[in-house]
Amino acid sequence: MHFFYKIIIKILFILSFFFIFACGDNGNSKMSRGHRDAIKFECESSANEKICGLEAIENFLKEDREFATFEELNKDQEKIAKIECVRAKKFGLISYNTCLERLIASCLDGKCAPPLIEPPDSNIAKLEKSAVRISIFEGKSKDNIVWVGGGSGIIVGKKLIATNCHVALVSLKEPNRVLLLKNIGKKNFALATIYKKKEKYDVCILKKESNEEFKLSMIPIKKCVRFDKLARGDFVRTIGTPEGLEGHSAEGTINYLGRAGDSGNTVYGEYKIAEDTKIINHSATIAGGSSGGPLFDKNGYLIGINTFGDEKFNFSISCDHMQDLLKN
Image (cartoon, rainbow, N blue to C red; front, side, top):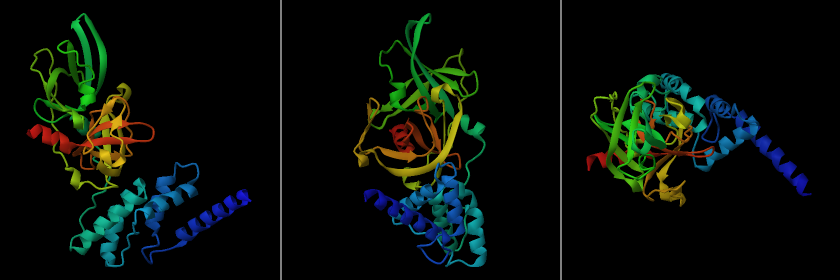
């Protein structure tokens, strides 16, 4: 009996899927062709695209979202909205709908501005210039040193580099420790020391040492986009050195914005962060070695510091904490 019950539920589930997909643009409970295309992009790599599509719709509706419609726009405005948001489709249903909502709002204000969700600055080589690889060694002499850890960093000033404290403070046996910085894709090196730190937010600032033997190209980031300016569905790009792969880049979208304490989980690995830490959960892959590297928005502006990632979960700490530390 239980078996047949499950079969009936699955049949109803599938029928509801086809019903939803058969609907047009006649109301908030119905999807447009653009929404259906976005779901197809989101589920194209799924083992079961139909079930994936239903789950995408279910997650969308659970958040009390409504499918954006063009009822209040004229034909020219509708055409602009569809063209400007067509690129957002490949990032899924939520990204596409968020793009439409923002552009429709702009049109109703009298100006159809470009959407906030667009493909990123494709010049990855330009973004790499603000990122570095960090290696940490220990030893009593040049002939007797060992590698103890490493990660990634972000150039934030003429001599300053931001990273995670769990990278920079991997070993506390000072003064017998050396922080070595390297430009991504180049042979430029520099030594660094701890300049400022805020361990409860896992943010450390390093200072490049003056050394004729090592010369590092220092090209700071353009700016930090504040946490309150971000939104779910926004495009993101990571750059770092996971597993030693210099210049590794991954893209995705923001899945969640909040505080570390919201989930009750403020511990990752052996590190603990404050409950009020501003975190950005996203779908861009990061792994060991990515920690401390930059999280960029679609304009190539910094929005966060990559902090933790595994096969299920990627999060970065808002660059707000870095900015506040630099100002103090």
